[in-house]
Length: 134
Picture (cartoon, rainbow, N blue to C red):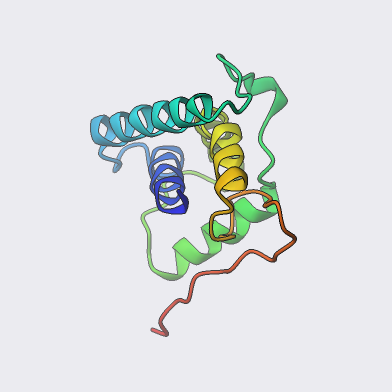
């Protein structure tokens, strides 16, 4: 669950931050398949997810979380083509399609509490990834 969410966030970030360098077709197919998967699993579990997410309602991930992620990408020389502020609306536009369903499934199965993966049934702090030192 958290692995698929990480893959979807990676594709969405790539498309939002580096639209010229991103493998557009592959990234869009990944996103489409991933959010369909989350939505179908959530519905099969009887979890409430909207048929058409409303981009105007936004996402629960914060802009500060977004800025932190970009700072991590910049440390590894990820090719950022757009400013964080310019890329944010596009990232939100992608993530709104899968965030609610992903969070619902993660909570229902009590998935590992990873960053950017929503609340769980039992109070627990998200576990940040361990990054090797450069």
